[in-house]
Image (cartoon, rainbow, N blue to C red; front, side, top):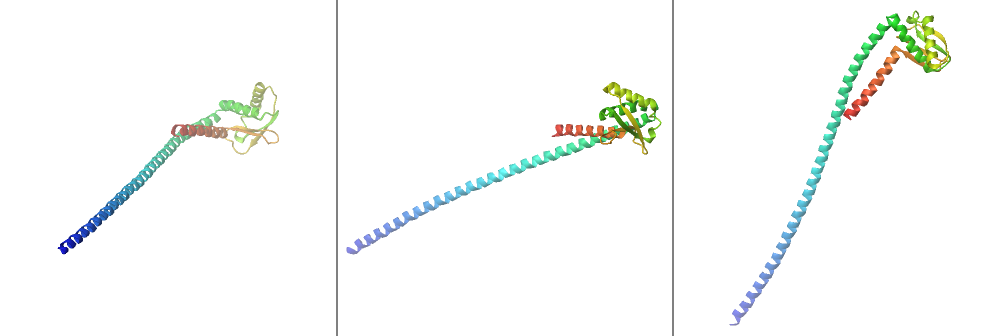
Length: 216
């Protein structure tokens, strides 16, 4: 009679221990599962954050590439336009140079041009006595009549009477002349080549500004 009672007691103890073990095991499993889920969720969050960073960087890279491409296209457009305009300008000035040489070959037209150019230069110097330097090829053109025409034009436009000293260079100046004050400190080059160069440079500057504005 005592043995079955003892066995029943031992069986109850074993079952109690097993139940407690199962409870503890279940708690450990639940905790492990919760920890695992937390780790997975954290990993997913970290992966999403990394993914967003990668996407953001990729977007920035793409935008930067687009900006670089657009900038490169603008530079190329400016280069092409400038090259085309400069080529056109060169062609125009070649024709102008040819026309100026034709003017030099026509004594009447060239005398009129010389009076205008030298009068303008004398007025620019603003002195009562000036030195006019011209090329040797123009010796026959600058006679007394032409010099008097120049003085008359200066007087009419400024109200001043000027005296002029005429000098000739051995080399050709290309048409027109250079006017200096007697000491040579102030000098105004009003030759055909100089005027063409200045006009050409001004025109190119205007064209560059226009291209920058339109392609900026």
